[in-house]
Figure 1 (tube, rainbow, N blue to C red):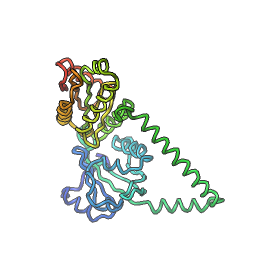
Figure 2: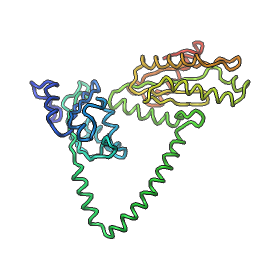
Figure 3: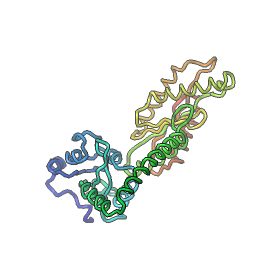
Figure 4: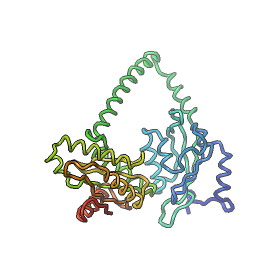
Length: 332
């Protein structure tokens, strides 16, 4: 057993340990990797200005407060440590406070228990407020600059230009990742999101599911009633799908009359319930002439070893089985 894998001293229960954490002013965290539960002491919340115990007790809360520019660096350092490529876990980065500002912290931690396969079972750590020191260094550096007033003015000008460029970049990214007709995410966004979810599932052993959907016999609607009618039908389909989802779920227009939904934190049984809810909502679709609009569904859950291509292929195969079983069906 390495120095970083030593267990909590005998005689300390989790409740006693967390009671001790309540007395510590720095931000203390305790991650049970086998259940996904993360305890954070009051000092952690107070340091960032959040009400005590007001956020979800999971690793996603941690990811959500890390500055976007620091996230990739932090995750790489974290994974190198838990996979024993680094001897220690200690890194500085910015965390978002409740008021929207960012605070520099030093994050350090130790694995105190591993499972038989070598994966992390439990890890303890602390967030230390180093913002004042960081700001002092920045101020000292600023004082050493020559032509300080001119530089400050130029910086303001560049900041304004950067804001405009960032706004334009965000607008372009939105257009690049969203279907123009239904306002759903498009295939590019789907592939990017699946890559992120697969990496998160491998890192934290969190479930997620994917539903692939295809409208049954949609072509006759365009042929007999025109593409304007077909477009209106696709928009209503998108609205009916959205009505059955949570805020964190991602609805996607995959292709012409193909749709998909990415369901983070969802097991197969729950995903099947979502597919059933969408199917029931589709039953309220007013027939278009003699055409009754239905969908077929392929439902899969991420499995260890899945990549986005493999997961999409399994969902597509399940969708094919639903079509072969008579359409307007759900298959897994």
